[in-house]
Length: 276
Ligand SMILES: NC(=O)c1ccc[n+]([C@@H]2O[C@H](COP(=O)([O-])OP(=O)(O)OC[C@H]3O[C@@H](n4cnc5c(N)ncnc54)[C@H](OP(=O)(O)O)[C@@H]3O)[C@@H](O)[C@H]2O)c1
View 1 (spheres, protein in one colour):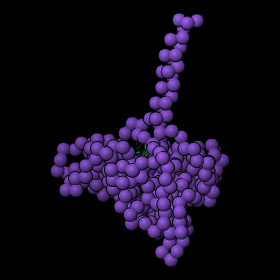
View 2 (cartoon, protein in one colour):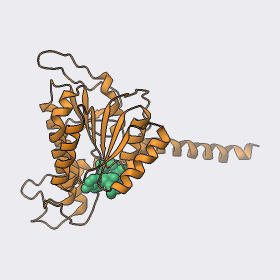
View 3 (cartoon, protein in one colour):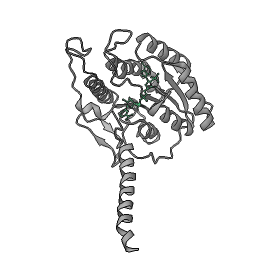
View 4 (spheres, protein in one colour):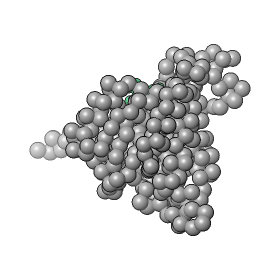
């Protein structure tokens, strides 16, 4: 029996270590039991990946979820999957191509026309490490979609988000922003040799800087601008401190030990990057 003890304890340690490593890399699960009945949520790029999973989770919690995607076939299929799995029928698909300012304006115009309230905007869609492509309007693709597209969308929906306070704008950044460098003289990579990884990092740094500045400008409005992974941040609607007064209230990000601030002062959850 004793000769099995060492190999068994090594095996147990390796298996335990693998589980801990998986949890660490995946960022753990969201422990919140919060529901968002009747809240309207927009998730960009929700037909797959983190966006679809976030939309699914928020649909389970009772929200009216709008999947905003560039490919309507994939978008409708994702909405069907989510409705089937959650039995929440308030899950719909809308066209939004973040590589087209026209498409963004059309999407926002329809939303503001049809929806009195938007409580959560999750800017999730992204292009990652593509060749040197440009958007319909001539912007470098990763900067154009990941930052500029969401920048325009957020600003077009801002009045509705303010009218829906307490509300949330959640921008999906990435640890890649730490390696990012903003070249304000050449945001479109026209003067330098294109480096797709550096362009992704620049776009994600732009997302963080935008989030931080937006957060500063939204002080006193009960609209919180947050960066990181979407679900835990989106769910904190009910916990924001909003003291109604003549100037509105103050949206406060609750203290939580797993939450950190990066070098730019932006709030992140403890979630970590899987592969970007
Ligand atoms: N996965 C990670 O490990 C990780 C780590 C850190 C940060 N992030 C961030 O988390 C977010 C989601 O990542 P993910 O891994 O889930 O990405 P993903 O699986 O590649 O999905 C990206 C989504 O964005 C959509 N999209 C791309 N270009 C678009 C456009 N022009 N207009 C509208 N939608 C567009 C895609 O649509 P199509 O299906 O039509 O292409 C897709 O739905 C991204 O912001 C990413 O930077 C991810």
